[in-house]
Length: 415
Ligand SMILES: [Mg+2]
Image (cartoon, rainbow, N blue to C red; front, side, top):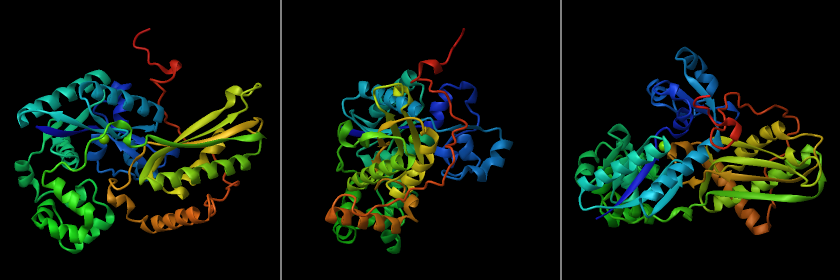
């Protein structure tokens, strides 16, 4: 029998930090977004304290102090590197892996029974943990939608959970539809207005009715919830890993406002690309490079920004980028090239719909802009003015070392 697995790294950013700080095992630990603005990853202890995802850091500073919580700025090169190791370990063990986000991958499993597939998943989990040091959970079911749901149960169980039709029938009344992967805000609203709140309610509908009310998306979802394999697992690169926009200047540039202009341009272009494929970015890397000749070759700099929530919003990106540029720009350097890379791309529709509750209007605005630009030519309407007066440095006070990507930061076990 063919099964679909979803491997999900537990509290991924926190686990990456703990890997090199074993003293933090079982101690409250959290990771902040760029500029140390919001909480973007929480250890179980933090979750148990009731600190929500995405809360601004200043709001919880006192609780954090009292509980002696370890706090980290996001260290994206570390997370990316460990993410690749986890992916490699999984790929060595199963033939088809689809990396879905920085800490999640879908894959196929073949087994004769639920007991066998559970044993297999457990062995995969153990091997990944042994090889990488990152704790993972694996949800197994007959398709992606159910595997995603199974992975939630896996976290509360022994790290592996096989969700078959029998178990689903028992759980269907307890699982609210907003917990289901792929239910976007519009579908959720429409379901609620028809008093369809949980999986059991939804499955009780006739599939023809579902198609009529909720279209193809609703029908595919219904079919997957009832156990059919609709959404295939595709090998890795089906989801773009990143989108880069950059260009060399035709002469050396010293002026910051010009570089800001270039970066805003590249951001607008990249964000438009991102929206056209219905993805959102976890973060953005900006880079400014000096001429390859001369004494400035080593002064090219880049900075990573992790967004408070994954986004495709040009406004939010520009706001972050302008803040960070101040931290890496040097007035004495002749710059030859500038650009940005949006990374950590994930499917927009699969983001928790709650995140988009107050961005619906902005989505309409951005879509309108994209359409106008398509109609009247690239970059016809520009978003984002230069913000020359905003002179403040990026904060990453609590950044951990680049343990795995910089020689000087490699941890010393004994010396
Ligand atoms: Mg995770």
